[in-house]
Length: 247
Image (tube, rainbow, N blue to C red):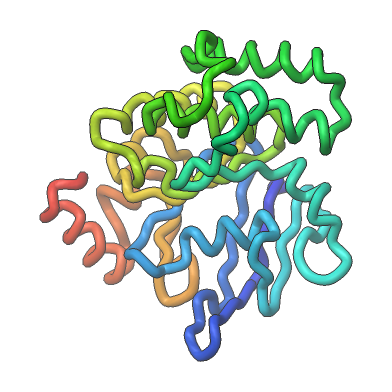
């Protein structure tokens, strides 16, 4: 049984149809990479899974429980599904420690001491233990993004959604963020990533989904998608990626 099921969803902004019967299953411990041209709906799909965007029809389920549509406990959903955006969204007036412990204390009612111990453990794990008491503006972009990932992990989510988390970073900072994702994948974290980093998708994904025409146009293991794509749209997209030197 998949941990996450997206069943025949549709979504439109006015006359622009983003999804038209999109269906996708994510198994526990899978790393699913969403690829496709800009505007194909990768980021919108992640926001729909997390309840930040409504869907028009269809349904989204986690462990067979519906998490889309009227009557859904959005706060409970977001405890189970963490999301990290391309912009770090750290609170600038709070220290790194305060940023990480705020939600566990306020939403999970975790004692402050327990939340701090957990936060320090996570910061040590990503090599930022010495940055607990500094403010975000003293960190590099890569460091801020790593803190944003830790802030999501501090809630103990079942699923992590990562939305183009390296796109706002300078090239030399990308690897330090991707290393965190590699470690999470090795630990068995279930993840869905929207990414333009094709080489990384090929390395870390257990399943790659190419989005086009409002659907998952083609999906499969990375070697199949990147080496032997079946669909014409997939082939054309990857040809452009190769020509641009991004794969």
